[in-house]
Length: 326
Image 1 (tube, one colour):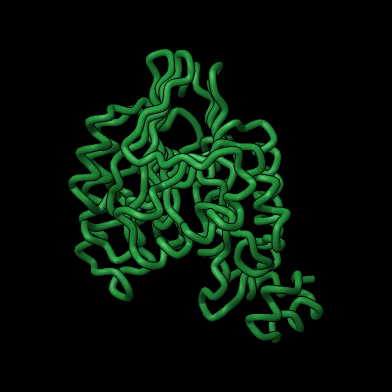
Image 2 (tube, one colour; image 1 turned 90 degrees about the horizontal axis):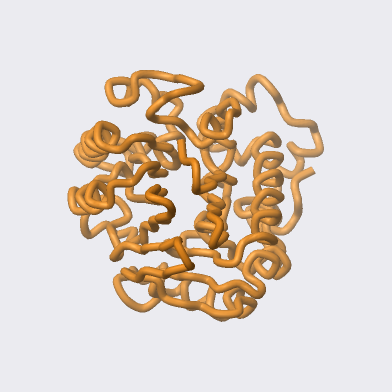
């Protein structure tokens, strides 16, 4: 899809875990976008299946390898699937107390969402904690909101903070990033949920990316935590993007819905493996989709875990966070 910009998804729902962590490289710069990954601790009243823990281990390995090459790491916002915290958690984030974050951020320039402006309370607190913990390993922390960084013939442009979903979302704001090199543009639009916001839609269309990686709307929460009108707005705007952008990698919240394809068939046209306008991250990499969270209930029924794992499941939440599943 792109001849001059290398794009490698590292962690995504179609790769069996939560998020959109991606490595991007041109001749001038190597960037690790949103170096985080996580699992949902409780879906269908079940913890992650052993296959999900295998997937997050694999994703952590890919992120660690990419971090050895990257010169810059970004944080679009401070949710724990979008950056790596410095505490022990083997249930959700697969992190030890210090080493995981240190390995990613040490010696890097970290381009961060402003932790003080256009930010909600929980992310402000997490941003402050990151600066005191994982961020202390960085060579430099630099606020990226609405800034452009030039690396020889490559420019990396960050958007103004945009809503995490609909306008004035309680979930706060995120940054989108565009890498521009040799007349190609790769745009990274995490957690815009479709986008649900028409303002975010206009910003994406105005950027005219050659390849867009975007998070879809959280249809798995429709009628439960998210109003149906928001989901439909996200899908409507997503269709407008698919009609305008040459190639789209569709990921994140939407793919936690086992029925996501049926809900988007009019937009996407169905599954395809090659020469498609819309691909999941797994399909972009030439792999099979691995929607493990959406399949969790089925996985436990069809592939029951061993007794040692069942014993771990019965432990308290705190125990599960501090003891690796067997």
